[in-house]
Image 1 (tube, rainbow, N blue to C red):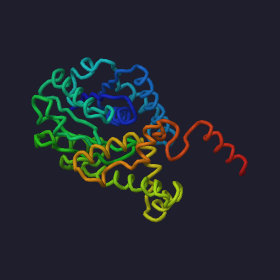
Image 2 (image 1 turned 180 degrees about the vertical axis):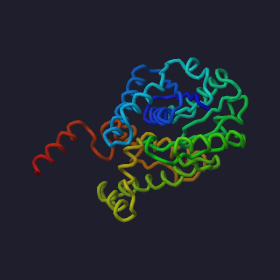
Image 3 (image 1 turned 90 degrees about the vertical axis):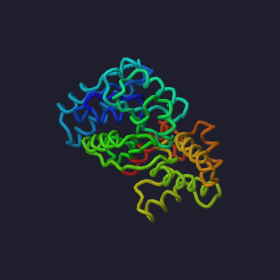
Image 4 (image 1 turned 60 degrees about the horizontal axis):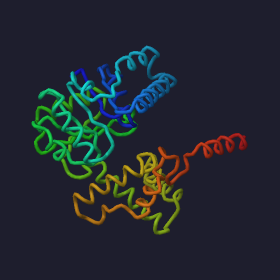
Length: 297
């Protein structure tokens, strides 16, 4: 497999495209928005510059990585020669099913179809494909170029051959693949999301503040980032969607999103990408931080 198509140029999609391209694969990055494609390529370029500054890669490495990526706004055009398609669209079941129905018609029967979904059933996604044995979950972690784990999710019909190829491919990307079965939330989010939700419940119940909750988990449990800050980076809307999928799948109230999380999503305060979540990421706050740094010197 040398030709990879990635659907979605957002945070996960551009990270996946970056990772494949840096490993020498030819990548077709697809998004319906030219603006999103430009933003995605700018992000890849900046991340490569950061790696150059840390002396992890050279300018030539950056050039060859960017040369390995071609962008498209037409899915049919982008997936025509793909050996593997990785869907990294919004975490929305109906949207993913629509994409996979289209992929079923536009790709060859030998093309492996993977979803980067973090919670939606691979078996359900595969049900709209004529040969579901070629559908698999390939759940990368954010930031993709840095994080080693890839959750490999086998749907009910995913073949041993396809699973083996994707495990080997992940290792070729210098990742660590872990095979899991297809249940809501898989492993990563089945454990992580209830913890994040419980942290939000703790805040909602007035037990402690945002800083205090995150500090307890960082210093007491050796987590590199507190659960509320992590939720901001994931996106509160994404956390909410994953919890809803798990609640629907298990019918267990412990997976029901906290009312505070629901209200914050409704208010558009969804974390880093909106400028505000449990923390303030606005430009004015960034300016205040710079001012504080200079005034303390």
